[in-house]
Amino acid sequence: EVQLVESGGGLVQPGTSLRLSCAASGFAFDDFAMHWVRQAPGKGLEWVAGISSNSGSIVYADSVKGRFTISRDNAKTSLYLQMNSLRADDTAFYYCAKDMGPQAARPGWFDPWGPGTLVTVSS
Amino acid sequence: DIQMTQSPSSLSASVGDRVTITCRASQNIYSFLHWYQQKPGEAPKLLIFGASSLKSGVPSRFSGSGSGTDFTLTIDSLQPDDFATYYCQQSYSTPRTFGPGTKVEIK
Image (tube, rainbow over all chains, first blue to last red; front, side):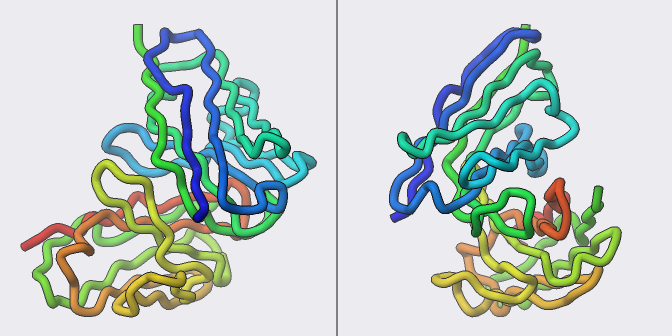
């Protein structure tokens, strides 16, 4: 069974950093692109970043470009999101999601999703 | 960026009703359109990919149609487990963008 489990969320102050992790199991992790998608409480879904299966291609939403860094460790079957210069509007549930293929910037869908981890940015 | 809209934003329906949700893209996205269901406190789940392909294990009362800019998600004979929020998502271009969601509530 494919499983994705996020961790690393919490309450942080504006301007600080946080690193999210996503542990993957049940599939050939190094064959698939992976993504982070976020959802502010009570709001809709926003794609944040994607990384290809071999880390050769990385794409970001404009809202996080220059502040967030997506990475992966295929040996550890893990996905990461380093978030710097956090702002109040970064407050959201962060989900990791598996792509249907190896390329993050090619047409594809998200399936499955992890249960999410909540990041709250507040002073 | 491609903008996605959905209508209605919410609807009330009864068990057994047929429900139709519309998704529109700001430009031609061919069939690169996918539908997700999200229940409160849970992550979204894929229902339909490629506009009309049902994910394995998803009940056949769910169906999708459309291409280009206009798409539809239909739920035949609404069941209690179907009350949720539904999102469309395009993958024709990066960034992948979602519609604002349609909340299906119990009448």
